[in-house]
Image (cartoon, rainbow, N blue to C red; front, side, top):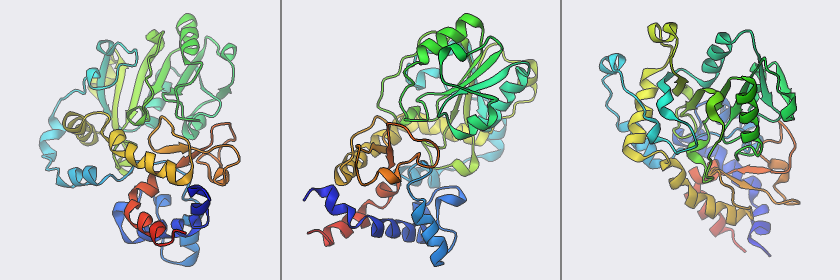
Length: 335
């Protein structure tokens, strides 16, 4: 009997172990209310167990949690500090970083709304199967390149949200946007977690690049990150910046001290281990494994509540956070 077939018999019990651990230990929970049990009642525990596979969030890596708890921040001092996250700190994805101004960001959503306001005569569009909140902000969803119109504004995630890989048509999309004058927002929230080498072409149309830190650091409850606005930034942005300086500073310190890909590199060994245990295929995004066709985990794919597509992915974050107790459980119940 293969390992994943043996594990399938214990899968439901493993989810209950995770939910109970989240209830007892804040280091096993996400920042948001739906990422942990509401109470110890059977109903609330069952609700969490049933939704455990949904909602990909930052992993609570022990060394990162320790670092966050050890931070000694001069709140008054950093309220006045002007510091920059250089583009050279990020992977070379084909962006000319010296053409952009890096500023603190309140949230990706607020930055996109700010950009939409600047281009309020344009129609915000997204590609099919984009991140759900970007879909809420967009007026139109497109499937094909020729659906882009000259009066549009494009919002796109890199890697792309649907399967956490660079969208196969992104260079053609950016070329088209450059050709007809469509301004573009790139959302790089998943970039620190991927092993995929991404190099974009035709990026002259990119006017804003957002980078939340809520997937590389477990701080989604405080929002924030950094954004790059194409120069020159407006007078209003310079006079009255809207970003979160505290999270911006924490992001800069983390990248300076640990490196941009620290969370990815720390998680990959757990990805390898749990993909093997569950019989999953490797994926470039470290937090997930790819579910083979016909696998018993298909019903628990990450995007089951959003859309149905060929790449079905499984959320490995709760299994990494409870690696010790789950490994002991499986060892004690092996046959």
